[in-house]
Image (cartoon, rainbow, N blue to C red; front, side, top):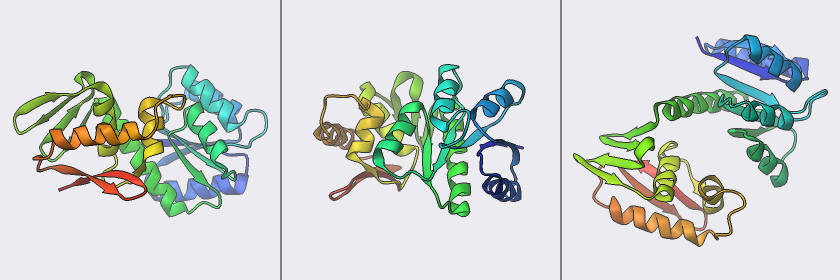
Length: 223
């Protein structure tokens, strides 16, 4: 059974999350701050972490930074009362995988937990499958119709990111930050250029297509 570590100093909120997650088939461990979480991880294996940001002793930013500096790839869903973009950006820079702002819809939280766990499994397997199309991370290769198509790294990572969340809309800036990095000097037009190349390569693919959301960004849709 999959285990989730809840790192939250609000006891009532921590218990609510635990109740909902247990009801949905997970096992749960609770701690009150980042320092306690690091100690718990020394003796216990967990599949995913739900962490608040504003906590005593060690906040969520510092906890996730230490977690990643130690080489851990455990998925982290950060939950906070903060909603400013700079706060969200800092969370992702520290190594957070997803972000929710209080007040939390617990049903949405359960859906996000499931999505993060599926994504972690895909990353561990180093491949993504859409119909009969396979994306191989280790070689930046897309195998479709019995043919292998090695891609430039940026093109592959762009397609892999969107294919990991079929139907999810990504803004150009999100894709820039994810694939090129937060400190990249490139502008978002670079994303459009790479999307155009991907469309040319896979225009006859019967498993997926890349859809433009006018004024917003792109998404991969399963056919």
